[in-house]
Length: 251
Image 1 (cartoon, one colour):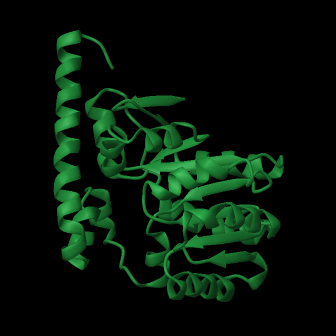
Image 2 (image 1 turned 60 degrees about the horizontal axis):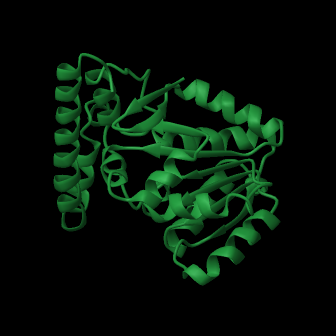
């Protein structure tokens, strides 16, 4: 079942339910195109039609940010729980090891993605690595990159590129990537796994303050982004709630 949150459909799934759907798709040799949404992405979707199209075309749309879960409750379309993209990625790497599936890692700087591959190879086995590539490339290289990922024999693809580039890339090339059973944008997850960025303590994740922890780590790059998007997100939720009250029904 999907809930409509600020005009974006979001699957009302737990982590376990999401994992079950992915497992069934891979076993059936089908493709699932997955995306997570947070406050910033929901804000940007209001003005970026390409991003909106890429997100809404996905087979599974999870709520990555705790703020999205809170908004769903305020707007009387409550989601069961947050399904953080980095947690889902970690769970799927473990799942791939159990099932002898192979993963392609695309994104981040060379030293970051190569370290992610080294960490997972040591923790599990190099056999789960179908290939990897840094996330900096020109648009005229995209088709070749997508084809090389398909040729790698990967069952799973993680793309750690900034939004909206990763969503648009996956939506544009998902046909070429057809043999890859699970494709997912994972944002800054490679930075977390590599240790370049520290993840917020659990209490900050649960209280919706993970964004603030990011600002503390990278104030010069992050403060303006979160100040603007968080303010707009709060305004959008308030506006939607007022519309609900005056219309007498859910939107």
